Amino acid sequence: MAGVSLLVLFLVRKYISLRQYSIVSSGISPAALVKKIHGKKMLVVLPLCINIILVSLLPHIGILLASFAKVWSMTYLPETFTLEHYSEVLFRTPQFIQNTLLYCSLSAVFDIVLGAIISYLMVRKTFPGKDILDGLAMLPFAIPGIVVGIGYLRAFYRFEIPGLGIPLTATWFILPISYMIRRLPYTVRSSYASLQQIHISLEEASMNLGANRLQTFLRITMPLMLTGIIAGGILAFVNAVVEISTTLFLTPSLEQASLSFGIYQYIYNPQGKGPASALGVFAILLVAISIFIVQKILGRRMGTIFRA
Image (cartoon, rainbow, N blue to C red; front, side, top):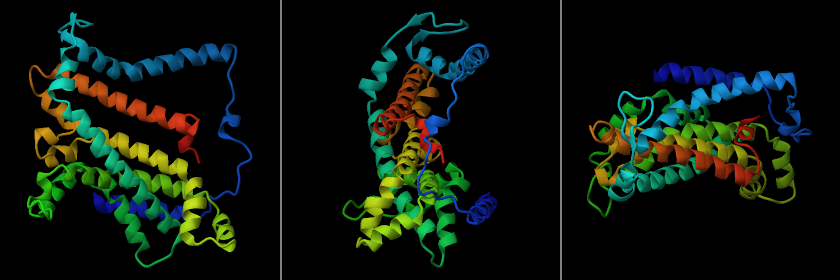
């Protein structure tokens, strides 16, 4: 599986390298290309869009209802409602949400830094082993999460943390590390795509005016590729929130468990489907809030971040 996936990625990368995608400036914003629909066309398009959205939101609506349902069996809607499920996850097991925010934030920050550096090396530098670096950065896409989880257990169950005297797999540190590696391809590819669109003449002009490479990267290159970096970081964070395969293998204890592990624990408890749904609602909220924050920071819709 890893071999076939890496071969495809290598061929795509070779094909992309045959062309230039950089631009010096853009004369038209993406918003200017949008055509508004009026009249009869709107009467056709609007109901279609509403139906698609409603069908897409049915699972979310079901999770929301289940999080409040005390009795729900063989009926279209719950028979009675309760707040006990939210009380359970907020006061009895709050560590699931707290740990998720900590682990996913740490992994996203490291992914942003590593993704920016790796993409810069791959686009702007030529050195032996460049293709190997690209392959290693994309390797987590090719390997299933269960395999990664088993691999981490085998690799680090005897690796003791200096000063603590306990294995790395017995601490929560193993979880953000695994999330970081699993979601690194998101920040690498998004930063790579953004950097391809920045013409190298802009960096050359900066260095001709006396700036060194580090100053040029921080003051010229980094701000121009910021949207791609943020997009990759958000994708890394969102996907880490719902990461389950590696989490099942690497969670050292229930007190150090994340949100996805909590859902897994609750869902196999006869009385735990309500709390599991409540945790699912929090997962949906984390994704929605992160997208909302990015839109506020950038002052545009999330979809425009991913446009070339």
